[in-house]
Amino acid sequence: MIILIDIGNTNIVIGEYKDEITKTYRFLTDKLKSADEYYIYLKDILKDAKGIIISSVVPELNNVFKELSNKYLSLDPIVVGPGVKTGLKIVTDNPKEVGADLVAGSVGAIKEYSNTCIVIDMGTATTFTLVKDSEIKGVVIAAGLITQKNALIGGASQLTQIEFKAPKRIVGTNTIDSLNSGLLYGHAYMMEGIINKMKEENNLSNCKVVITGGASLLVKELLNKEYIIDEFLLLKGLVHLYNKNIK
Image 1 (cartoon, rainbow, N blue to C red):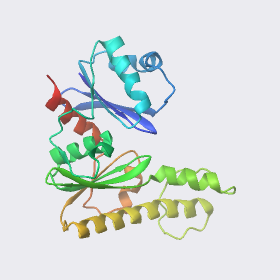
Image 2: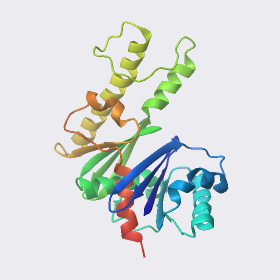
Image 3: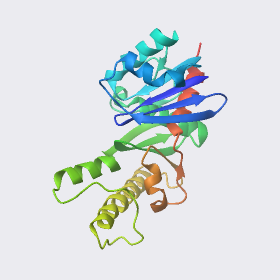
């Protein structure tokens, strides 16, 4: 069994892969946990691991998971970054700035859908990666949906935490509906605007749009029905990267 690990700023997602992704797990990222503590928490998931690949945007945890893999599993994990073969060219001012999550998501989109597409990852940030002919041409980074909600509620004394649910009408008649309208419709329309501008600037009127990330299901019904929602796109990308780099 191959273990796929996506370490994000908010959540860590782990997938089990045996010919296909069979199970996934999600839990909160804790930058203060040690390798020993993570192993105690994850040992039942990791016990049958024959290989591990990691995508991380939390540098503090890279060595933690390397140590866990080496110490408890006697495995040397593949960590997406410099030196890892991707089959993907990054055509930006500084390719090293492009995060491992964006690389893995782009590889997943290319292998599963199209080598020319816009890949959107909805996490702590909502990112829009332009992939053209298997090259990353650039990225748009916006505050994520949950980040927006927490910032708004944290800065306004009379607002409280809410459960996301899109109202049927955009004009709310109570505080909860009003917040949900502004956050969910606002985020969806921001996404549509950026997608349309990216297509216009790059002459890509018919390119596929692939959306992933923990918040993708929250706005699914508010977006163009032609967009592809793939909650586990990044894990699929990690599968392809593992197979490309395994010795």
